Image (tube, rainbow, N blue to C red; front, side, top):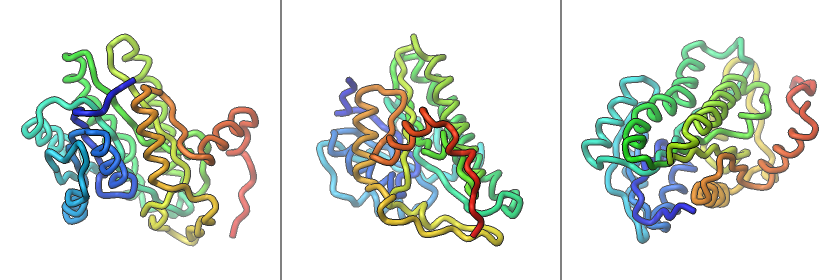
Length: 259
């Protein structure tokens, strides 16, 4: 069981819906946070949130859509805070529409932010963790990381890849003292519901009954991190989808009705 009190945690995508919840709840756990986001103004608003036993020790505005942005984030964190105990790769983006109508530069950027940036940051911070023989790396995958999701094809690919990376890395680090956690949220009440659509296919409004509370998702994710779990399925719909897919693995093969 990991005690988060006093732990230095780097959280990417800190200004988003999950990010602000992670910030609030981790401070209540006593964690010392280094927050990163591309949106400097929103990042400042997160730092004004009521604290707890923990607090925010540093912020870094970083664009993770490039390798240079990842390197700058690592350098800024090392200079300001030194070693970290936990890396939470929370930053992500989504696009909606027919894949062939999606601009090429948008899915290149999506793959960079959702998959390559977590891999790059892991490669940088992992070297420091291995020297100390302790640490924890967390990846925000998605239910779309184990169920292929039509019209969110690039997003689904990025989350499948991130899930596989976390699983392979966990095996590689099994005797190192470093833990890995993959988290698979379902739809949640975050700004990802307002992601852009491309081409003729418009994103449909997700029925409210299928939208999980970001507060509850993050609380369950944090419990999974504390317990050192590899896979965390936070919320009813994430768990239900996993079990249905496990015993009836044809969800992604169903015909899709065009609207």
